[in-house]
Length: 311
Image 1: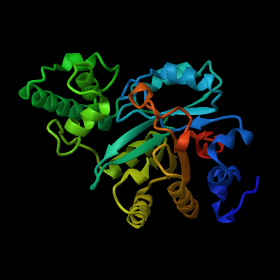
Image 2: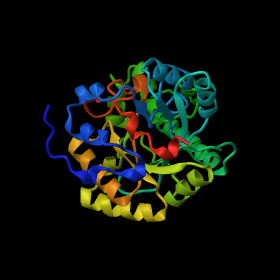
Image 3: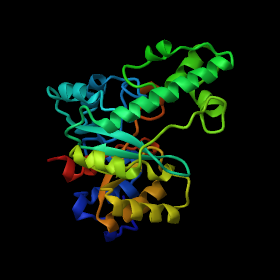
């Protein structure tokens, strides 16, 4: 096999990423197993937010796949981390405690991963987030009931071990026959401008960074290409966010095209910041996304495990 177009600028010593990044960029994804044996995944969700597997089931699945490391990054909650730590203690899988925080941003949404957090109990920011989330859920329930969909908070609680979110409303609507799929529920009812959409109350980026840093973790911009701006505008935003204390970028994500992944990797290397990779695995709620895999189901190499998270 001949590999062309290799540029040495893609090599980034500071993040501990080896020449295998270049192979990742130029070798077809289904050939990656020729070059490494172990996968990682630094962006997953359990049933404590909008995933379908428990933290224990996620750790077991990671071990069955011979993965080297996995992070659980539930939305705005750390409820599943103790279970994850306990489950990983007897497994040959490195567990990285994490969280995915929603922060103020227009247009679209901005999510920040906190990876490698070490303390997370009784945090006032998370308590306020959960209070506002419950108030939002009650408003959505009122909207649904006003429109003839008889739903209760107790019914929704049965669908999750942790916090209730829009995916649980979507799942309820599907099981009750109001829609044919979760995607249809979001598209027609639960997204901006639709009948049952209520905007969430979010924290500032500075608050998110401060929470993650004081918890001993690293603040990473999650799936930056989901932000609805052009690439040049995104770079300006990333420059500013890094100046505020952002530590890195999730350059490799299941929803990111390969050519854009190259551009993000190059930018992150030039900025000397942490580079992470994650599938955004949700279990059966997003069955097309597979644990430990990213664009076109390519494996996520252990070379995307930053040295900062190995300590």
